[in-house]
Amino acid sequence: QVQLVESGGGLVQPGGSLRLSCAASGRIFAIKGMYWYRQAPGKQREMVARIQNNGVANYVDSVKGRFTISGDNALNTVYLQMNSLKPEDTAVYYCKADANSDGTYYTDYWGQGTQVTVSS
Image (spheres, one colour):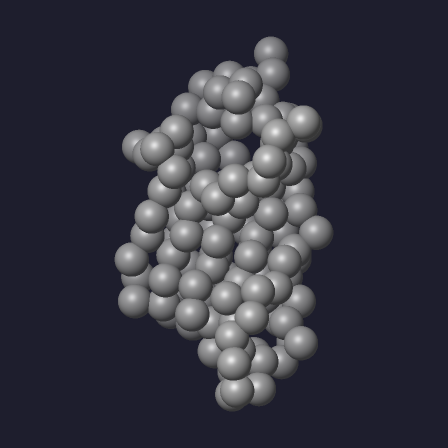
């Protein structure tokens, strides 16, 4: 199995920055892609950013130009650099891995989430 642990959340003022980290561990054969999702109170979980093992990154429109996803070559560790934060970015942020743990098939693994609060 693959375990994911997020870190780096916290309270920040509007316009500030945070960097989230997600570390994958356990039995990892390969990771095809890593994702950051977020869920605000009363809202559905939405994908914020993803990075594939070829380095291609994609973002939801609301964070383009402000957030940057990056990771090591094996995607065992990924980061989400969040700049120019807005109150509407307040949410629990989750890391997800599209991973293969035994060389057979890929499945989704989720972290526990880290709270990001943007407020003055």
